[in-house]
Image (spheres, rainbow, N blue to C red):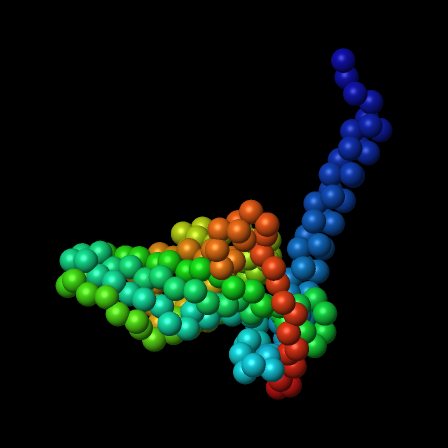
Length: 189
């Protein structure tokens, strides 16, 4: 059975319009991200979110252990994210583990803080939802690469794979992450 020419023309037009609308929405989201992250912000507690970033993850006193070739790191820290509400940021705790094959001895020690910059809205949304962030699923960089989702600012080399697990304990896995609103102010350029 052949379809009438008018029906095919309408179908073709609808398909073209939907493709154009998708590209418009993609551009609007990109422009919205630029607008939201335009200025750096500082929280009242002194945490700094740079311009172009949705937030930071800070692990204050991680423990590192090596066992011959294996090297692991674990700790607890905080996520600080920009809020949709002007003048406020969101913060919540998270657990952090990392590892690689860079060990050469047997040792355990507390090391300097590990700091990450969250450049992707997708990563920020997943964290707020309480979902784990596994480094293998995202683009990780040590420098401010335009396509990076997460930037390692300090305390960790790119050889490590890592996991962010939102919440302080297993109850956060069940009940979800509880966020706290904190004041933060933009730093004009």
